[in-house]
Length: 185
Image (cartoon, rainbow, N blue to C red; front, side):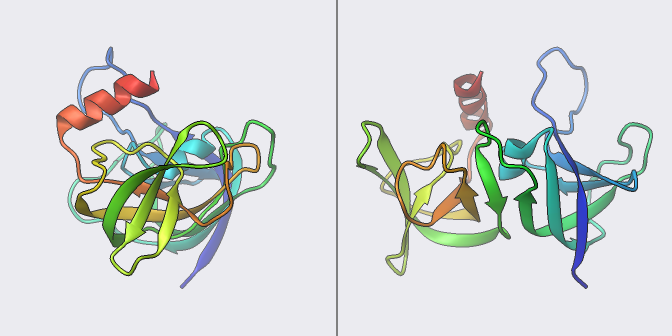
């Protein structure tokens, strides 16, 4: 059953000085003080909302396998997001909204747009073309690939051309993740 939460997003980044296993995902601390893990992937689009007030729709679920047992002394729940929307859009916002993630098959392509920077796009097997809103780790242009994709609405300040946008997570190696982290520092 679909539920709605409002709260602040907390997103964790890799800390090279920290010892042991790190939680690199994202969570929401809702108005009632509960904490909900919304993603375990450090590449998720939810990191773009860190420190911001959001409204989220989705469903609580029980994860299988390893899970985050404690967050600031609290036992977190887990929440499968179907939509996440920024409450107050500010000029520095990267994204305004994220939809549900899903697997897509296709290929990444680089092209040019009205601006000087080359644009990354994803072309599905059916020929649908989407702008890619991020620079995913392990992205290889021109090869067929199955990706995890979230429909996103970039903020107007960062949207460079019209069209539907996706936040893509590619299959990648540890070396790809380290290179991606290096590009973001």
